[in-house]
Image (cartoon, rainbow, N blue to C red; front, side, top):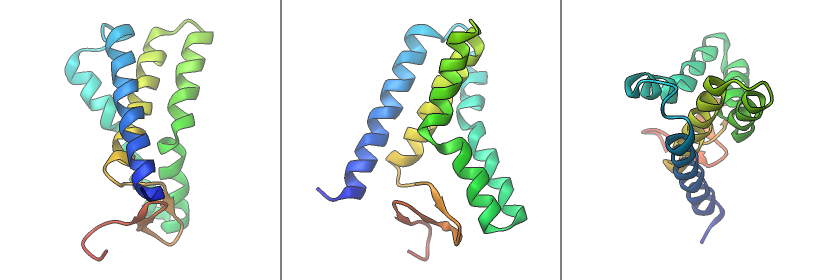
Length: 123
């Protein structure tokens, strides 16, 4: 298997694990519809591309790192904030979801250029 396939498999495992843990530990923190909205909320970071591809990649990548969701989970646990723990699991799951479908971390050249390869119609 090539490296991209391994990273997509890793994304699938992170996605499944994060949502399973969310379901077992945090699902009472948010209504199901709110959980769906929060799950997809990291994608709002694409708005950073209005400032250009370099700033856009920085903003997008900041909230699509596995460490972003993990840090929110940890902070929520340290400060006994169940809502933060729930959001952290959703953000971590979102990062895995994106990687599973080949939407990797962005390169500063273009939104379509990712660490998993080029995305979009012009592949």
